[in-house]
Image (cartoon, rainbow, N blue to C red; front, top):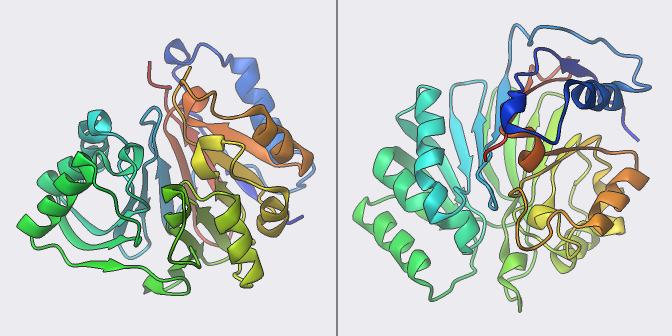
Length: 305
């Protein structure tokens, strides 16, 4: 398995909102990420962070905001309708009034529900969607918003370069097919490479979609994995995890959610490959920064109530 250089600095963890994690728990987590690496541990973030990925704590949903080295930005999903304003506030607090690319992985409400609020709040340069469609009200509302604001929208294809610049590439690596019984398998899967650092964002991609990417020979081997379908046992097959071989997995899910996410089966499989797990329900907002050369710097905010 690859060895990750983890630059772990000040972990902003407001324990009052994260009752399941004590200071000792955090220390153990950091030790786990660093164990056996023999690499540098820094108390400060990299001086030249080429990219920062924000896994926003949106409850039972998904939303990732990416800041790239040339100042461009990407938003992957915006969780539910009720979380839309939280996503908007999070991005505005970072100082942005525009987003270069918005990716709607698939048309489930816990991924696209907040996107109408995002479109109202920001100038959007380009949207990418999968070819999965539905007749739900939120999907119709989103399509109306895209049309009203004349936002360019394309269906992303596996192998397509969505954005590139000096030292980074954002590539669509799935899904491979065009027809599925389950909307989850229409999820756009994207890979971000920044120098030698790498991330994989999987939406709600399940085992069928995972296997198709493996069979197609897509390069899935990355350091940081956004776990599919909130840690459901329907995703993260053993074959897929072997292909990805992540050092750190991030699970976006809501505390005490009705689905039991993340499922014990998924956590056991991640543990079996020696992968450390971060969770928005326990760690809150999770931010991972990298200069593309010297590893990763992790920081947390308190988990949402």
